[in-house]
Length: 209
Length: 289
Image 1 (tube, each protein chain N blue to C red):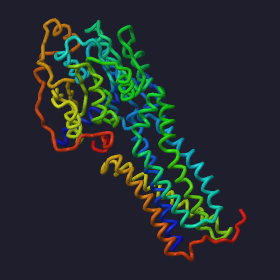
Image 2 (spheres, each protein chain N blue to C red):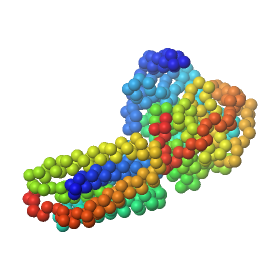
Image 3 (tube, rainbow over the protein chains, first blue to last red):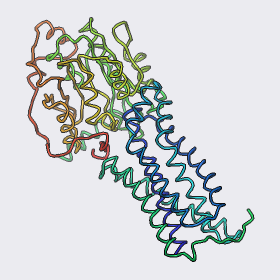
Image 4 (cartoon, rainbow over the protein chains, first blue to last red):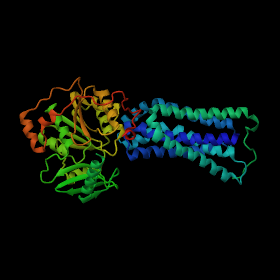
């Protein structure tokens, strides 16, 4: 049950990250255009944020790893998206008056809008590996399967957002949808953790890496 | 009818194949091809399907003649505003429009905004475009230029939007917010002219978006192609057209028959007004094509 939960939630996280990233382009276009450097800024910030998130998530997994804490990461990621959704216009207005060059403008705007939520989302992958790993010998396979699931989620999130969501919904609606998916995923993790108290702890046997 | 379209398409493709490529220019956006055929030199974006649409053309025998019908249609805006103090053009192409307008209106300041530096380079090298004291070009995204100009309290008597081509529409240049910003950048009673495409599902959305900002539109449909030029103003209704005889004769050498064009102006609303306007929140323009 726990394994299934972790994998499905990792899928949701992968889906949401790409949803968020693609919408980033939409968000920035009215202020900074949609040239290749705008995408460059967005992808740079996302990669940077994920790198930081992986590091932080790995560290965080050292302290009493549990589904409850896992749920906490999802909820924090969701909540950290709220300022981006609500204040995007004001933040971009400010950056636009501050910086003339649209390259550095879009970079700073991406930093303000996407760094924190994406970094928190980045914590999910290593933490998932920790929750799923049962032994050192199978850890590579576990990590591989986890990345398979979450990256598949990213692929589907990308195609759904760019092909369909932008046609069906307004930008803010899709952003709130992403928020709801992440927050909902956190709630599911929490309820599974609470109903499954006994199996909540991750395997405690020390693993030598 | 289908057969006819096919035949037409075939002749178009084969004629494109006969054109002699004289230069290829690398661009960070889309590579540019300059070709010549029958004394007409054209600029197109490189396209593997051999179906590139020309972005700009110049008649080498009569360089001042406006080759494109839609460019001549845009000039018809002079019937609403015969003496604009300054003009902003979004989308340079070969620069035939600023070149021609600067000759007809020597006292007018003309600023062209072009996103691609390679297009400007080609315009200068192959299409006789030149910057001068009154004619300026700026390399920038059109939306960014307009936002920045608003912050700097600039105003223009006439704004010409010509940044679209049939293959790809910059979606952030076809939203209600963008048109509101453009309208705000117009002087009171300032004129807007936009070259747009009418042969697609986008027609309804595009029309409604313009209508949502400008209320009253005057349209100059193209009799042969899928283009149309939309005229609108920063006022309640566009003024009556005035055709100054001197101006009329001045425009003739450029292939612009002002009287003929004005007689084709229409206010008819032939689109579905129930669709919602495109906004920064909802702008899948390329998916609606």
